[in-house]
Length: 531
Image (cartoon, rainbow, N blue to C red; front, side, top):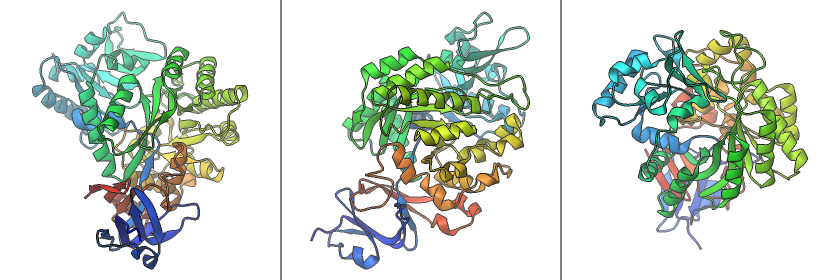
């Protein structure tokens, strides 16, 4: 008899298969699951060299699948960047102090980078500007990211980027200026690229970041991640990590952000679908709009506090149609960032154009975020079998900024995950790191409770139960990466990717979900993390 390498027993095993079966033991051998079920069925596979793990009531789930986190950027952040997220910094004054401390230990002229503030949680309740940063960083360039396509630069960073009073706004970007026409340091949309394009990381930096990200994601039970928005040097870093045998998180890479037809042609001409089950190129990443907090998400109606502001459109409908069709025709999965209702309509029109022009079975295109879909967009999503990747953790961490920007009534319809599920749309949730930390306990909690940090509830009618929320990290999520035949559930023949947790999330009230903690993670049957 072939004995198991590892057996885990004496606790609830949530298989998350199509029938949602539970078991109390699972056996692993040669990186795969060889048995799952009742204890008598599995224990016969225990041999003299088998590692037997007594769960003692702890819970096992499939290794979690993250459908949209900037894995490399998270690793760079974790290894090199100041984290000013609330409550680590509760005021602009504290952010500036954290920058001052880092400047004091950095060589002159070295970039000092930080992320991610939310002005609605800061004492001053405003955006920071260059004038907050200049006194603590006169010689070092500083850039602090808020969320997608927004950040603040100090005067040195603006100088390096060549941004002056005379600099015109780039297409689909805004350089904020005061009443005298002087840049304040705030950059929105593509204007952020004027600064970020000047920041460079070495390949060794990136390899260190990938190692760090693997550790961080394993610590919270993630074993597979869709990594959106990688360019040539980033892809090479992942490939080198894999060649060295260091990559022990499954990564599905999306090339981007592709913001024009020329950039899309470059991607299609230089890359193709390929790789293995640890590292592969799957898709192309594009974007139509920005974010709610920065007032750059694209809506038909204006923002609550700025009714004449409708957000930023990053690309025209006609150009997006051609970009999507080109990727679609060449076999790529296309993932498009779209938050506002108008942006979502533009996105779905592009997917419809591509499928009508070049019919293709099962492309599994993604709409990333999809916070405010119109009824027509929902119909298109169903008809075209588009997958939705959304970020319920944002309710908890960023929900107050959503309320301030749009008002509580509009926020009732934000991220309608229950509607998605009822319509049969495969939903994956993620954290869009580095916007928020990859914390699946908060992801499940926020999908169930839909509460902000201050306890406000956003759209209780769209709440789902904990089992459905866990599904957003398991089988439906695995479908996003075309890997549902090998990961996403605990079934014989699938990879031995699993996580052990301190309790069963299906047996507790919603508030208790915030205490759900990973205690062990396995990838390919190998233990990669233990608390």
